[in-house]
Image: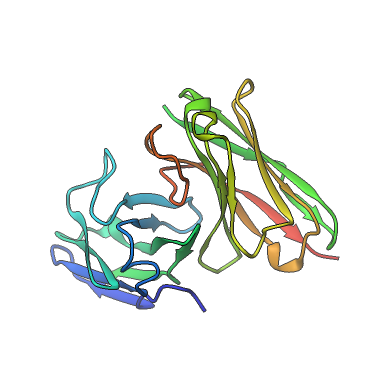
Length: 109
Length: 125
């Protein structure tokens, strides 16, 4: 069982927006602004999409955005595209450790 | 261009040791914290640990699941980070990824900014 809770799957049609939630506790997500999000295509290494809750690394599309409210962080993808179909993982800092969610499979219909 | 190449993976028996290497290029290696993550077959990601840059003391942090068995070190003169894995268990079977933080002032490696392609470690008798 993962420390952070994500929905197993989400789906959306091209052009739509989707949001993936990541629920933790006050000891991780709620206690620090150190939430990150990763995209992973099958057979590939993960790619950092969001760090420190809402910051995008250079080169990541502005269609990806992150936010946090209380113990729940969210990744929103707007203008959904076929290439966004992938697994997405959230992660948070917690007392000298890092914890992950179980991952969410995004299907673009 | 930041490049990270892991090597050293393979098949190893339970209880034995293995050392992974992460050879870096495209940046001043000694300025950055380096981390290791892993992913068991068909499973999610797991943070393993990291080593700070010398500017931040070169200290290390580990996940509870590997603490006392795994050791991360670095050779800044060779631009290589190492993951020494001892007393391996079958549950350590995974693809191991080396990562670099985004910025030199990120003293802690709880996230992975740049990732290598990974190396598979299989622990089985």
